Image 1 (cartoon, rainbow, N blue to C red):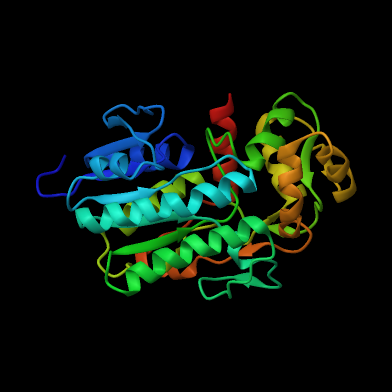
Image 2 (image 1 turned 90 degrees about the horizontal axis):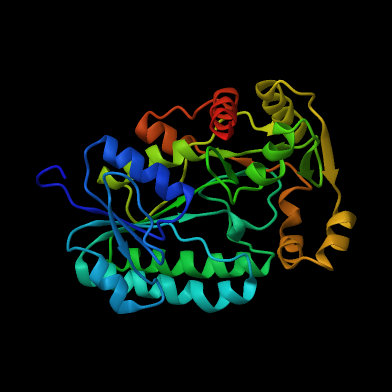
Length: 311
């Protein structure tokens, strides 16, 4: 670790965002501690087991004066979200307060609800889904703690994301695997609407920049996302070109998903989020790009890198 620099502590370090962030921090020769239930490991980083539901476990994992990133992903089940997310946020805020650590929370856009227009950091918080209500609540608790001076914290918000090894991404699950076999990609609800997608490698780079900036705390930052957004058909066409296959696409209509929901709980949990796919989903990140001079990776290159990784 660079002398005099704080250790970077990645809570919930088993996912792709943690991997991209840890890779970026190690490239910059920063000290990294990964904290997860299973002891996720990345070359050059310290690995530690920890339970975000256990206050003592989290407090012991955070060195004084460190930078903490809350990157956890919970099972896609509203029962789990309602019970665990508030506890996790309270535990992390308490631990960061005690350790005088700075906190960056990697968030999504569920709390905005349906948006007719462009999503910015100033978009009103109007959740229309049960999961959106949970996300709004925990984001508010973080911002309140930051505003009161209790802790230095900020929110880093991303659109739907994709990228190498993003196994939980809808794109990586529904689009790329079938295309790689010459089969039809699947897309939710509508294929002709623009839908912003944040590239995971840009997330890693952007989070590391936030950690070292003096003027980001107490605020919300949309992570760099390429413009203009592609439609589903445009995304599939670019991915198919990289695989050297025909750009076949099957649109999963709401009625099809409701039938599938009768037999699959994950699909059942997805139904309330379909508003994100039946209208333009446009995510604006100019605030971050101007502050850091950051140019998001163009979709064509991000898709090419993602496809190459799947090979």
